Image 1: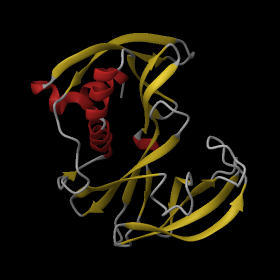
Image 2 (image 1 turned 135 degrees about the horizontal axis):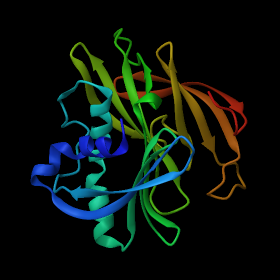
Image 3 (image 1 turned 45 degrees about the vertical axis):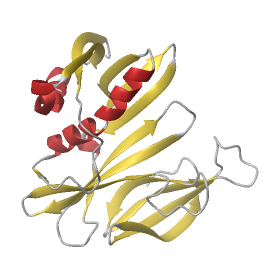
Image 4 (image 1 turned 120 degrees about the vertical axis):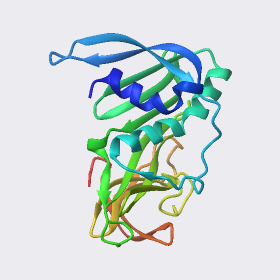
Length: 235
């Protein structure tokens, strides 16, 4: 699916009553790695911040999940646009839909949403139906980087959005600045890496890393095992 069609699909549900925000530059890349410049228009929608418990509609496919997550951030995009004079760029590259508000190299708002091929899939609630986590690498203009994880539970009719978790809370982190980064689902458990600050670490740079396994039960993720590892380890 080309980028222009993807953006149109993402915005299609709101185009009829949205207000134009601004024209942005979006980059596509050909097989030689050469950037192809295209202009698209993003629309600001006066929708409220979505409640984790207010969305009960069944989502039929993974493209619709991507659209859901994109629209979840629309109020934040509008807020940033109202507060700062910056350029909004949306690019599709490296397996992500990248949304970035930046000026002179400084990012005020950044969300890198996994494309469907990068969704984390497996049966988390042990009902013999596939569930999906859509991960989003996020930053808000500081050195803090975290992951938002949107959980969609499988049903017989499709998928249902359950809740948005984040790196700070998804694993009931044991200390301040501890963050969990989900990687895969195996045998009903969510596996990933937890980073934590050692006693003398600066806030930006944790030096403790653990291979961490979480169990999903009654809407919460609980740590069931952890093993010290290196920062470079992927699971």
